[in-house]
Length: 334
Image (cartoon, rainbow, N blue to C red; front, top):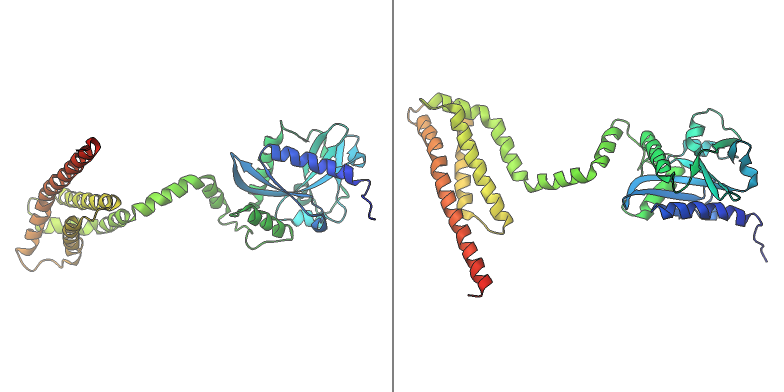
């Protein structure tokens, strides 16, 4: 029968101690199957406030007396130097001192990238303690390194993230390889991801209004020129602003009626008639061959908003009053 290696208990002690510490602080740990172990023991996904941050790293754990030195500890490189140096996710070395029940760590990838040759051992300072008191600083330092090197990995599920980490360990992964031109913007977007998502929802909700504002902004010079040309004694800026504000007010009314589940058919027709005329007539105007044509439209453009406000307010306020009466009657059971 096969025998258990006498060193297995010692090796497992370090893996178990590190895993317990990380999971105690809500970080996600996946142990690498022994058959796929090519110099790493764990994948770790960092979290913050219960959410994944996209920072993933691999860990090589060593446990036993032979890794202790007079001024700290050391992790053997063996034939992993090039792999750890070129890895698309950082490889962290951790040494477990069983006698002191203490963990010590070093960023192996960072150390190896700082040298053209692969040393036989990487020193682990005795001050680099990994414990409940230092784990937040450890996570922050690893996150900073990952962000600087463009190594962040994101996925919809744990399995996708760890799968991406495994692919990245084999070399350059097209799915996660950084584009230096946009990495800074990506980090900024991820930092404000929730706010940007909320802004996107608001933008989609009010897209018709935004498009209307864009069209009116483009046409503003035509509107002012039209009023200057045909509006005798009319302030062209006041005329255009008054007309624009009325059209926007109508669009806002229609939007909120739609959101309330009502179809404002008459208001929609009125809005289409007003915008259909005043958003294209000034643009196609060639100078006005008829003496009455231009002044008439300037007069209409100045009169319609004043009349329109009265009609809209009267109609929608009356409708709101009727709805409130029905609600009150329903609440009293009458």
